[in-house]
Length: 78
Image 1 (cartoon, helix red, strand yellow):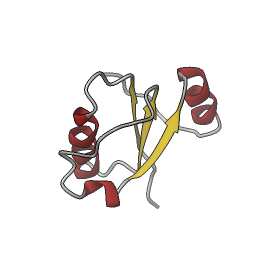
Image 2: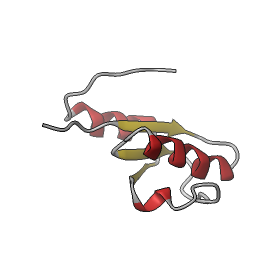
Image 3: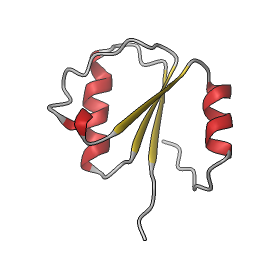
């Protein structure tokens, strides 16, 4: 049985960093990339990994938290 894993990023200052983070997340087998705050992002640096990972956007951390509450998961903060 597989498991779902998420990466949540909040208010990334430089849009190009989202693509690089997505590439790293895909390399580690992350299922979904949750972007909170800024809607516009550039997948530059992703090198095609955006086709291997799902993206979800929330306008606030509260909205993202409500979404994650319905899932059973372990939280790891860096």
